[in-house]
Length: 595
Image (cartoon, rainbow, N blue to C red; front, side, top):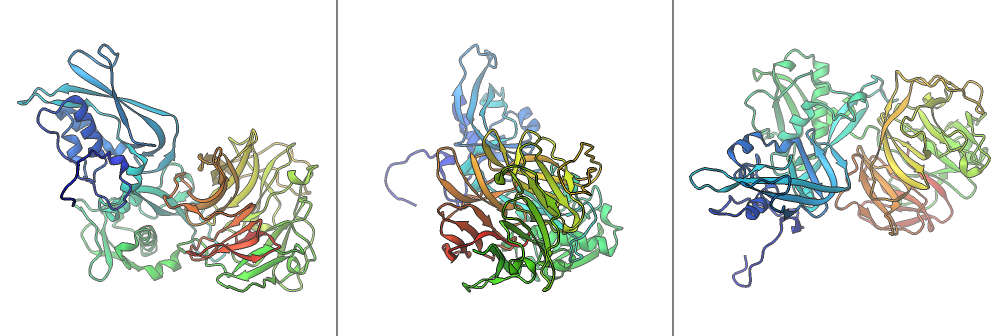
């Protein structure tokens, strides 16, 4: 602490240090309206669990009615206040009205789900004399929920992934259930473990709910009276549940425990190595260790890939071991490695048994095995677009073994799925994107989320859509593709939401974890940059990566221990965690990890 020098006021939104803790102060006696409003706003940025200090700035009735958990509004530079003139509509002779102003960045709803926002924020705050013994000024109409600046939001809140199972009931090629990450934000210093468990029990967020399931029975809660969950001396977290879960079987209970373990792994400091689920009477229902949880469903939804893949100067598919520093890639086994069929782009199935590739003219899609002696065969899909740049995108495999690709033909743009990579192409419905062109496709390993680069009015944006696989039909005529094309589709990509609104032009992207993508793009008036973006649209504070010149393609693994790979003006380059970019091959294109 300094022992001399001048004192100055510091706005809470100016605090950059994530370790700074803010302790709210109660209103002083005789405080004027402007001071009450400012004190209330500062109290919202504190680490007060129930906002008890913020409530001291409200009238008794307003404190009872105010619900800070219903929404959090994030403003770029924090709220500023302006007093309304006497006679304004929102004021009266007995009260004072101040307006909170700011530029919206995002909102966090009652489910703790983040959503990017823009536009101007204006919200009146009304004050009256409370009529008590001191007859002090207090707020009787507070803003809805919590309002704070982006700096404070990043200091107070922490992103965490809840995990649920894919709802379609199918498993990956490895026979394991597929997990889906559902990102939410919790207050990181207010018992985050207990917060996170409660949010997991509440079920998935609204956007993800149609395509996932929870193994916890409906209306399952923590046992009444449970305040804090902490691991014991054996690093076991005991989770007592309400009577709704008393009768579940061992298989279902094991899935419940797996959901807990995967979700709590986002808090590595908690040291949880085992979860014990208890009945409402405190007796054990089941136990699961972190190691055994991987046999229920792999945390990263797919195993660690053996190789990184790309195309060499001869347009053959070649590979490097995932953690190797070797500079000489080897051709893959099978026809795509021998040059029997040259390629312009490629994708490798997540079990690394099959590869899909597009011909150099962008017209034909081929699927081939990695077995020696296998043949390419006929194309499984053709585009009839006139220009090469308007034909097929780079393909992508999901964890189910299905293959996805888009045809950019301006006369009839379509998104396709081929079941197990060999079935008849299925036309995928894309409601809400009818006036847009899909320029790139990357499907998550879970098979229920898909990342798309979409072009509309000359602007390319990144969107995340939800894959729904039943109850959707497309009766429109299909022409120009291969015989056998399935014109009746039971697959749709719905609610494709923008997740990188700050980027005016997106040129490349790849999944980089359960709820994270690595994106190449540029902001308005800015230069090209590489950054991480969450699937909910939030951007980590340390998300900007070292730059490269002329990045055209980028690839990342769900396993963050593996390096990023990119195609830039320097050729094929890799960036292992914590290291700079290094050139792997001067002449190469289309870097990909399995998927």
